[in-house]
Image (tube, rainbow, N blue to C red; front, side, top):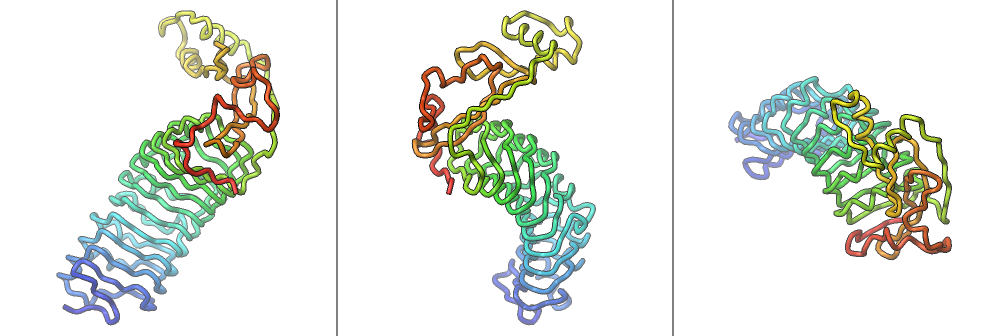
Amino acid sequence: MEIHEGAAAAGDSVLDFSRLNLNTFSVDTISCERKRDTKQLYLNYNRLTSLPPSVSLFSSLEFLDISNNGLTVICEGITKLTRLKTLIAKNNRLDEFSLPKDFGSLQLEVLNFSGNRFEEIPLQCMKLLRLQSLSVGGNRLKSIPAEIENLTSLELLYLGGNLITAIPPEVANLPYLGYLVLCDNRIQSVPPQLTRLHSLRSLSLHNNLLTYLPREILSLVHLQELSLRGNPLVVRFVKEMTYDPPSLLELAGRTVKSRNIPYYPCDLPSNLLHYLDLASKCPNPKCAGVYFDSCVRQIKFVDFCGKYRLPLMHYLCSPECTSPCSSNPQSDADSEDESSVPAYRLQRVLLG
């Protein structure tokens, strides 16, 4: 069996061409049998500028590492690797124009594009429905596409070290997401919809522009680690209310909902039925009210594990509505016991 000079043959299923200073990758000296049997191929730490079409000859390939090269394009031939599960392509010069059109046809489970030049996540990646781990950290991303919700098998999403300013609510539609890394970005707020991430165990938001968190974050029952250091979180109790008077439509909707006035699909136009479905219950247990678009925003501190005090955003139905925990006035140094999170829930809250 012939092997490219300098390559390491670590078992019949592994070919290691890493750290050989290669400018090109030739398969001429590799037997057909060897190409057919190889499941892992390492081409990392070389000088390749493009992934050669000959990679498609490794028909059984499951793992491909092409990281730490000078790659600017990935060839169309990669789409012929129907068994490929893991692609590591970090630390190259790839961008959103570097991928073949049919890249989304791959059956990838792990994809790492960290340390490249992506300004947006290619839409081809949003078609990788078996993907469990997606890493695009250390790029130039400015946003997360709404199509991220298509990756319903995703367990890890790493987007740290970019220029992202907002978290789209569609991220909340990833039922198996356990690790969400959005550190070192420019994010100013966290959407309350993230409460639907019932599998989330670790949320990394350090080094962003956050000044508060939505109170719904308390509903993340499996969350064990929350990293918030390096954010301009307020350091003293803030009680600031802003309120836009409700419209006539909202007042009517509040009346219907709060007084449980019965209605049926045949009674109302579809747009009004949809509007009534959007009612949010006031979190104050002493208030039976609801709200739609018009609400009072109030920042409150809440204890996490008895050690950390975080500013959470509350939404109340009117300025007259008392916050759920403010019936007994407390000093600025006190926290809200009623919303406290027990120590067994969050094991690590990193604020500094």
